[in-house]
Figure (cartoon, rainbow, N blue to C red):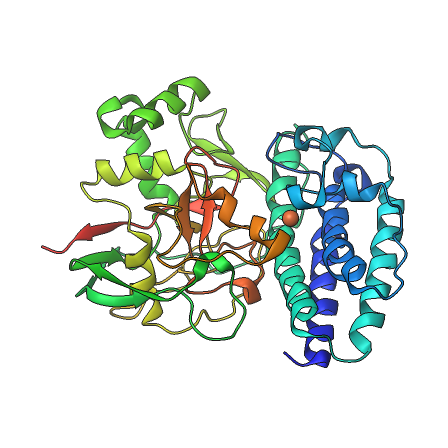
Length: 416
Ligand SMILES: [Fe+2]
């Protein structure tokens, strides 16, 4: 990537990050509603910390740290960088203030612009900048995801952004797209940016299969609930049933029983009735798996998902939106709709290294590789993923009981 392109990428990613936080009040920036969800202020500071630690401090350009104590405070999980403030205590940090974090971000941002306006960077620091931009995009998504927990826990149900007017959605019948399978290739190839976990491109064998042409809707998921899906242990994996019992699940996260019957849902648009044709969102892997079993089908393998979606070419940049929207119309014959920009799709594949996997060098080796146990792969992207960030080969990963991410359901089945 050329130096001006890198500079533009950096500037745009920082503006997008700030824009995601812009609708919030300063009080919203500090709360940590659950252990997994970090405060907005922490996300903003941590993104600057990444550039400061891995680009500016490493570039030996005489950069002066804004505050050396932030190295400890805003380190997420990098053992190579040293100790860190405990994740569950991020919401206890009333200091530095939001204003101080803004000054920190300006300090880092200006130093980054000076660096990127200078002579072209050697490959290693240039890569660190590009990784930093992709890292910022991940935290842009997390700001929306994590602050949703904060706002939904508030009985006043604050509105992050009002729901835009849109034409009424029309039901779209679920159709199965047949795929031949066979020996084919998955994984990222070429020089364009990708995370280490997407490489190398390699062969895999798939039996013939079919994949659903759209995501499961709220109305369809409600049928599962009304058929007693949450009360039938035989539909659930053993660990899933234990989680359902322990956590008292009876609906997706953010759903609540409405006073006059039916269900309401808390979203970044405030509180409202469950919209039947929106994709179901905020379900765990266990719920997605139980739903699939109830339908007599299954979740896709990550390789099946990629092989099927790759035929459609790269993701078409959609619109960033704080809430997943219904399909605007029927997919064309054979089209796999809502692959990107609605909800992440659980696969049944464990998050493990590809054959021949090599982690990034140095501290960046901690970025993805060390999380390759006890998590499942999600494919696609969600409405709160920056559109530029989506890739056919992208491998997101979460624990099977995680529900606070924008996660939905796409079904698959064996060819018959
Ligand atoms: Fe991070």
